[in-house]
Image (cartoon, rainbow, N blue to C red; front, side, top):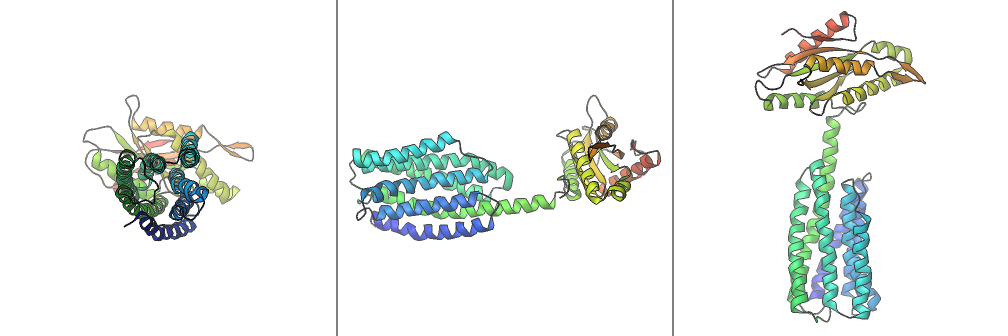
Length: 384
């Protein structure tokens, strides 16, 4: 099969990719990545179309512009992957690769007419673009999961390997190749590889979007929408994981239930919007007061819960009391004036074995009621 026919065989795949990316971009309106994948695929496809017509088009279109778009499409896709990961490709990398194709293709068309070198330039830029994607894919995988990342990663490994062999073979074995459209088994192998890659890239990028959507839904299901803290379901999963992984006789831990004092008065006196602001304020203070190894969540209403661990210099009761004091020391600001906010806490130590969460919450609640009855703004530890 001749080279021109192989390139034309890529057209339906690229057209399908354009339509799929367009639909994906319409769905993923809050994400920049799909729009860049759409633009990159379209640019790459237009470039390949111009390449197939270079026998009838002026060199500036069929050779120079066609090669620039065909290679540049991968630069655009690279930027899309970076943005989807929440990053940006460093300007020096984009400018450097763009300069290679914008200057290289005209130079080896009008100054020195060498199709093999042009093919080498195309290959080097495409290989670099794909290798740079790997770092951003790792970020996406840690955030959203691995299905799409694995497909794209293995596709890139395959593409980089096959394109390296193809470009190296063309430069070494056929350095005087008259045109990319000239019969060449090496170029044909490279184009067949590109057919596989184009298909995998389309589905890989769509899988990235699907994994992102699923990740957002999972996070929403485990997050309190008002405070941004984990909700009760997420907290219970964390505590159960602690039970399963914590060694017996290890670091002392405790479950602490916090309740905002006189919160009903805040809602009744100032309105629920101020009450919501107070909840957000307390959540911020609690999150800042715990360590990375501890966890805090919102149970609902004005109740919060934390799983804390003892330190060499402080018991779990001391740590819970410091958290309580952190809230008391940081007033809530309402209309330019400070409003004192305090919390009461019931603490239950998590001892050996695997106690049920229901029993822990029950004992912590009983201790919390005692703290309220004793005057509030204090920590009471449940009896062993």
